[in-house]
Image 1: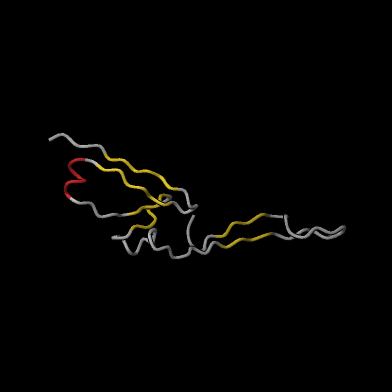
Image 2 (image 1 turned 180 degrees about the horizontal axis):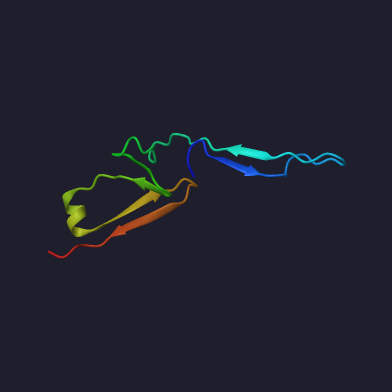
Amino acid sequence: MKDGQKIVFHGEGDQEPGLEPGDIIIVLDQKVHPVYTSTDVQPQGGRQGEDLVMSVELQLVEALCGFHRPVQTLDNRTLLITSHPGPA
Protein backbone atom coordinates (compact mmCIF):
# COMPACT_ATOMS: atom_id res chain seq x y z
CA MET A 1 0.00 0.00 0.00
CA LYS A 2 1.21 3.48 -0.78
CA ASP A 3 1.19 6.81 1.03
CA GLY A 4 -2.04 8.64 0.21
CA GLN A 5 -3.79 5.49 -1.03
CA LYS A 6 -7.52 5.32 -0.31
CA ILE A 7 -9.34 2.29 1.03
CA VAL A 8 -13.10 2.49 0.46
CA PHE A 9 -15.78 0.44 2.26
CA HIS A 10 -18.87 1.06 0.13
CA GLY A 11 -22.16 1.29 2.02
CA GLU A 12 -20.57 0.71 5.44
CA GLY A 13 -21.14 4.22 6.89
CA ASP A 14 -23.88 5.20 9.36
CA GLN A 15 -27.00 3.18 8.67
CA GLU A 16 -30.48 4.46 9.43
CA PRO A 17 -33.93 3.24 8.33
CA GLY A 18 -34.99 4.95 5.12
CA LEU A 19 -31.54 6.32 4.29
CA GLU A 20 -28.85 4.83 2.07
CA PRO A 21 -25.65 4.23 4.07
CA GLY A 22 -22.60 6.23 3.08
CA ASP A 23 -19.09 5.02 2.35
CA ILE A 24 -16.19 4.82 4.79
CA ILE A 25 -12.99 6.13 3.21
CA ILE A 26 -9.60 5.62 4.85
CA VAL A 27 -6.59 7.53 3.49
CA LEU A 28 -3.18 6.08 4.39
CA ASP A 29 -0.56 8.44 5.82
CA GLN A 30 2.94 6.96 5.83
CA LYS A 31 5.01 8.12 8.82
CA VAL A 32 8.76 8.63 8.87
CA HIS A 33 10.70 5.92 10.69
CA PRO A 34 14.36 6.15 11.82
CA VAL A 35 15.29 2.77 10.30
CA TYR A 36 12.68 2.15 7.61
CA THR A 37 12.58 5.50 5.81
CA SER A 38 11.01 6.65 2.55
CA THR A 39 12.35 5.22 -0.70
CA ASP A 40 13.88 8.63 -1.50
CA VAL A 41 16.64 7.87 1.03
CA GLN A 42 18.01 4.59 -0.32
CA PRO A 43 21.12 4.33 1.96
CA GLN A 44 18.82 3.85 4.99
CA GLY A 45 16.21 1.69 3.30
CA GLY A 46 12.52 2.13 2.65
CA ARG A 47 9.87 0.49 0.54
CA GLN A 48 10.50 -1.23 -2.75
CA GLY A 49 7.08 -2.21 -4.01
CA GLU A 50 5.39 -4.14 -1.20
CA ASP A 51 8.66 -4.90 0.64
CA LEU A 52 10.27 -2.93 3.46
CA VAL A 53 14.01 -2.58 2.98
CA MET A 54 16.62 -1.83 5.64
CA SER A 55 20.30 -1.24 4.96
CA VAL A 56 22.98 -1.92 7.57
CA GLU A 57 26.75 -1.56 7.54
CA LEU A 58 28.82 -4.71 7.95
CA GLN A 59 32.47 -5.12 8.73
CA LEU A 60 34.49 -7.15 6.26
CA VAL A 61 34.94 -9.95 8.79
CA GLU A 62 31.13 -10.18 9.20
CA ALA A 63 30.58 -10.34 5.44
CA LEU A 64 33.18 -13.12 5.04
CA CYS A 65 32.71 -15.12 8.24
CA GLY A 66 28.99 -14.68 8.85
CA PHE A 67 27.12 -12.91 11.62
CA HIS A 68 24.07 -12.88 13.87
CA ARG A 69 22.29 -9.53 14.17
CA PRO A 70 19.06 -8.73 16.07
CA VAL A 71 16.62 -6.53 14.13
CA GLN A 72 13.71 -4.68 15.76
CA THR A 73 10.49 -4.93 13.70
CA LEU A 74 7.79 -2.28 13.41
CA ASP A 75 5.60 -4.21 15.87
CA ASN A 76 8.42 -4.36 18.48
CA ARG A 77 9.41 -7.98 17.87
CA THR A 78 13.10 -8.83 17.67
CA LEU A 79 14.20 -11.07 14.80
CA LEU A 80 17.65 -12.62 14.71
CA ILE A 81 19.12 -12.26 11.22
CA THR A 82 21.82 -14.83 10.46
CA SER A 83 24.33 -14.85 7.60
CA HIS A 84 26.44 -17.96 7.24
CA PRO A 85 30.10 -17.87 6.16
CA GLY A 86 30.63 -17.91 2.41
CA PRO A 87 33.04 -20.18 0.53
CA ALA A 88 36.65 -18.98 0.60
